[in-house]
Image (cartoon, rainbow, N blue to C red; front, side, top):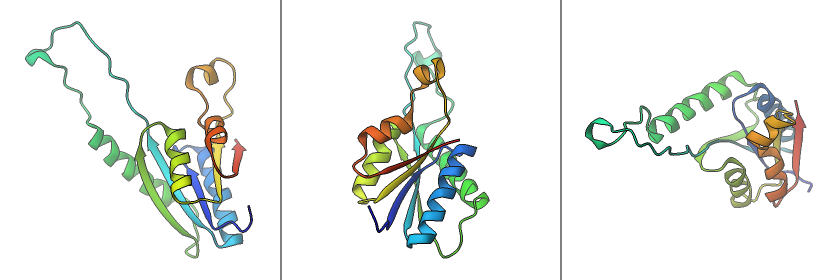
Length: 150
């Protein structure tokens, strides 16, 4: 595992994911690693309807392009509010797909040495309903994963 030169750090812009970034920054400072900060826009389910709509189709108020553009703005705001020293090299990426799949694919493509990911610590029905991206990343990753429970 050592030396750590490439760290993938997923974010959902939450406080727990800020803790994941803080851990990545600390490790990057210690080992001179590059951070790949990534947000994944999850696919939206399409809902079929039997209601007639004008023109025969339902207009979706936001396009995927709009959501990606908003995610890039949110990523920039997240980075602007984070404490990343100038000496730390990082790249921001916004991807589209199933979060755990895209996070582990990025880690594999970049030949990452480590993934730092925070978990919201949900349990019971919330974890059952929403799943755990962190748990799936641990199962799919081809490199070590540091999971931070916040």
